[in-house]
Image (cartoon, rainbow, N blue to C red; front, side, top):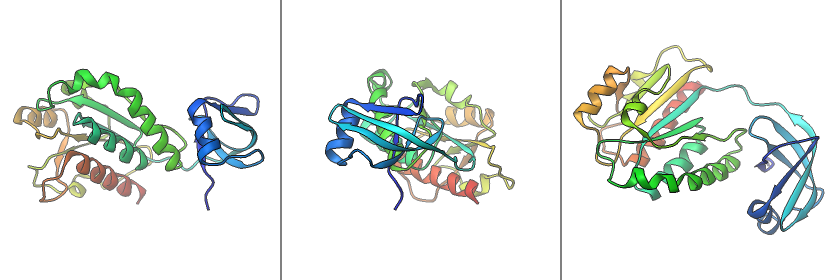
Length: 239
């Protein structure tokens, strides 16, 4: 069975600490005890570490050894229009589990009014969800969750492969994938809002180099499309 993995703020002089709610969760819920061995990440490197102190407000680790990192994988960036926050949280959770390197929320023409203004108060919660999902998925690095941007900034996302998920497209997503795929690729997926894309947005995206592609004949909820699209991209670049 794989060891549990936790993110720590930093590793310094062979030691690391967790405090506050994270330490309490580790001690009370997971029953962490002195002498137990876990994997820890400082969001850059991975270590095998032993617990030296385990109490409600503090868990301290002693590094035993640095562990090798997994082979590099293609970066997947999810550029996602804001949707109702409970569903956007689901996108953050599942996209994190699937290994996206970055989530860029943006306001589309049909984004529900008020979501962009209220999103600033949600960023901390999104980061917490991504943190917990990263630990569950045994990631080494946390995904970057950006501030809400405009549609113009969204379509300007820098990537070598740019795929726009569009229910009106007649082209299956796998036909939009490049034949030659490398671990150094940066792949961006553009996800629309619950109301769908406007024709102006479609034209702007095409002009910016995005390929319009479909995930099937059924109409998917935004959060379903996000998960399916990221899963297809991840699988394609694994093979």
